[in-house]
Image 1 (cartoon, rainbow over the protein chains, first blue to last red):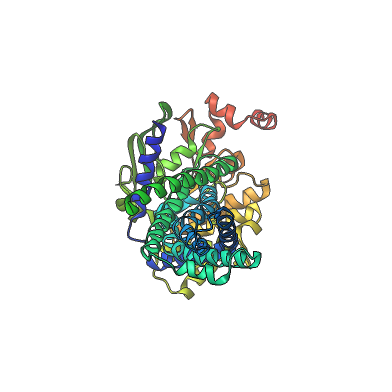
Image 2: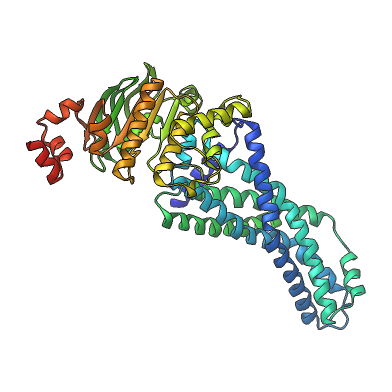
Length: 246
Length: 249
């Protein structure tokens, strides 16, 4: 029944985020700071992961394509759809859950155990909204852009790897990219990304906000934030795919 | 003035506060003393609304504070300042922004006015040229002073200090104690200080409330405390051999 307790407490915590800000200008500054932090701050790892992910998908698809009747352009199709539908939204969200989720949980957890959150409450500030709402909004706004960049970089990485290794020509790869493209796939990927952004930020903030104890517990909250965010990303990936694509 | 009327608090069936009643006067240093686990911090958290009492009432200048929701407590919040044991300064902000924080949130002062107020408060706690330092660059005593400056920045009517001199050397402790007392008298604040430092009690205490296992065990002033025959209080105050010898003299 422990999970029910956490589910209920998570629901109450999330509900408390939806308030009228005490002072809009302060929340706005926080939002800009978080947009910068989540967007530019994540770009390095996102770029690196995306390029290599695209490269690996392309090389592996070529390696597995043993039927001479299947045109080599299919590699482009497979790389494109894998990256757009699954790898960029889901893999990137898992990467961001590790990077941003642990950072949110440890930041808020440390504030909790050092009584900084109590200080906010005493001043009459809704601490959960002040600390978490800008993060949730920022993540839901910036993650789709990060994922779109990841898609481009993934496809680009596939092209570079395929052509440099000489396993596919540039023309075949690009032909595959353009062939039977479904624009809705992008919309679907962005719906998933926005949902994952909400889950990563709220779940991580929930774990940080309910930290009790000291440094050990902050570390535990940070680990739990990443673990539960990742599990929920995978569950919601399945649910959204089932709901939207079938 | 803050009044406690028969307050009770339990955690998981364990009684932490039992039937505590007291009145803390304005312009006085009201000290709450007691050993570790006696319920001092829980009582203070109930008084500032971080915890809810199970039974009883807390009144601020005869207005009921306990049992109110967040919105109803807002007018009270603007009059409350609190200094936490560890300072609770915001790590991501420098000293100036820490002190300015409550002003940013709740006043419509111009930036110039806010900077003037911040500098006044920092000067009042004897800190100069520290505006751009971050909390990690401050010593323990400086952190406490910045925390006091932040607490008094919005001109509070009630000041709560939870063990403000814990972890400080005896000289710095006395400086902090005297500073809180001066501020209390200068701005006519109702100040409540949790402490188990006997120097504080003897140096600055106007009214002293002794908690023992969550109960109000003794109440009085500094002169009374030196003459009391309350065994538990005497054991607590004169715990060291030196203090026992002084008591004998």
